[in-house]
Amino acid sequence: MPRTFHICARLISLALAAPLCASPAAAETTAEATVALSYGPRPAYLVDALPDGALKTKLQSCAGQTPERSDFSIAHRGAPLMFPEHTVEGNRAAATMGAGVMECDVTFTSDLELVCRHSQNDLHTTTDILTTDLADRCTQPFAPATADAPASAECRTSDLTLAELMTLRPKMDSRDPTATSAAAFQGGLAPWRSSLHQNGTTLLSHADSIRLFRDLGAKFTPELKAPTVAMPFNGMTQAAYAQKLIDAYVSAEIPASDVWVQSFDLDDIKYWLTQTPEFGRQAVYLDDRFARHDEDEGQIDPMAPATFRPSMQELKDMGLNYIAPPIWMLLTLEDGRMVPSPYAKSARAAGLNIITWTLERSGPLKNGGGWYFQSVAAAVQSDAATYQVLDVLAQDVGVVGVFSDWPATVTYYANCMGL
Image (cartoon, rainbow, N blue to C red; front, side, top):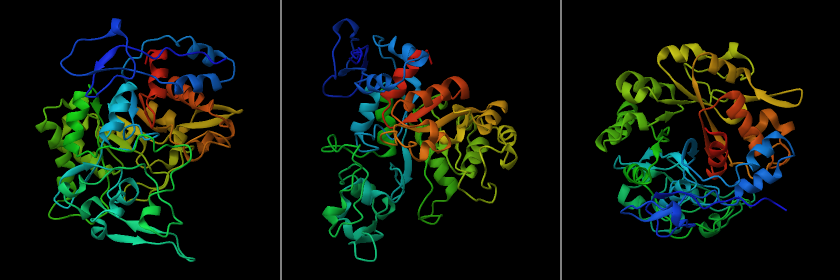
């Protein structure tokens, strides 16, 4: 019989209407509503899936621990395994799971207001825009599926003002490529996700996210998203866009030490390092050089440090302190065991802190686990791999933070291991 995990915990001040569980002895007196930190059932399920051994024994030994917020646990757009991403409700859920750092993917509207969206052109899959009066504002209106082409649409935040955007209703990220109507196009949700927590959710501007995360007691990791539109846009240059993000935290009096700004664009990172050094010290270079060809970034092979351009040491010499590749770039197999990749070893040798993405984004981990686990696919054949991978990342690679679509999974591990 599965072990039962103790999930009621120390209470923290959150702006939620009702607690998930209560523990009067652990209650803290605050002026706001209180909600107990809770792991929920998923960590127990994943621990039970592990084969017998030292890792399972250790994680089982923590079954009665009190959940604590951990900066090692980073909420990836909230809790999008079961909540629409970049919503008030999804981020509140992440806070109850102990995420110590929360993310707003930052893009902009037609009136140059910053908002939280995974990309500038995702409104057709993450909101109900195609079924509203704003559908005709989309860059590419809905086109039904035909015998020759799938259904399609493209709706950008830059197609709308902030006021217009905030009238939309969030939904789980999905599309049905076989749809012949805009209503049907709203479907297509992966079977391992859920729309259970979709109704009544609320979009976030970047300013909203700062207020919310501060109220939840979390720290901040905004990502400056690459614009879909050509820059400058309505007079805003890329540099002004990068500065605008920083200015929001300065205006809100958020300490730079609580903010990890992110970008896939090395030019953004260089801007922050030189122009806003107090924030640049914690700038996170999201490394997608495995698939990208830029003027200063050629495609790299994580197994071959000689291909790294810039090298890890060159990045460190620029002033970079944090690098964040996907999980698979940090791992390889050695005699069937998961071990740190040459990429991971090179980053550590250069003195770079490593953050990685994204756990709990792949659904059931069978037959290799999909894109995020491609370098260790042979060792990923069941959900047991979730904690096996996390353990190698934490103990052998030495990552300082892990993004997750369900933060409780990482929080439980971090609390158990004292991270």
